[in-house]
Length: 160
Image 1 (cartoon, helix red, strand yellow):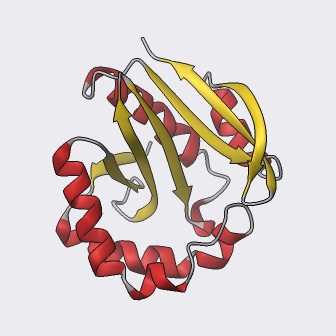
Image 2 (tube, helix red, strand yellow; image 1 turned 120 degrees about the horizontal axis):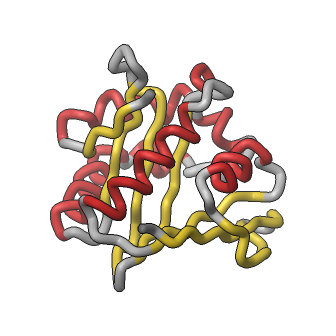
């Protein structure tokens, strides 16, 4: 089972390497972050840590059983007992149930540690793996819309 580790300043180099190594893989199913994201990564990382310190977001690394960085999972826009869930799993780790397990862990953390009552998530229709992760974690599709010109679904899960 993977573990979630809160994002820290010393994760910057590993996280940048993860994002660069998987950029093409991620771009198949989610809008690309763009060159500026990578060129300005140190400032972006510092901004994420500031948001986390304010309590408006919770950022996590997904580590496999050997402690290797295999993904990231974010809870953003924490307000009024809700947050939006986002996650990415490395191409080399895809298909092993890590995303499903990481999302399950995030739902537990969201309810128990962050006092959230509900989570939302978004994925494109052409990403069946992500849709399966969400439905297997008791998320329900609530709305279809366009995300960067691509058909997408918004999901929601009430937390206990």
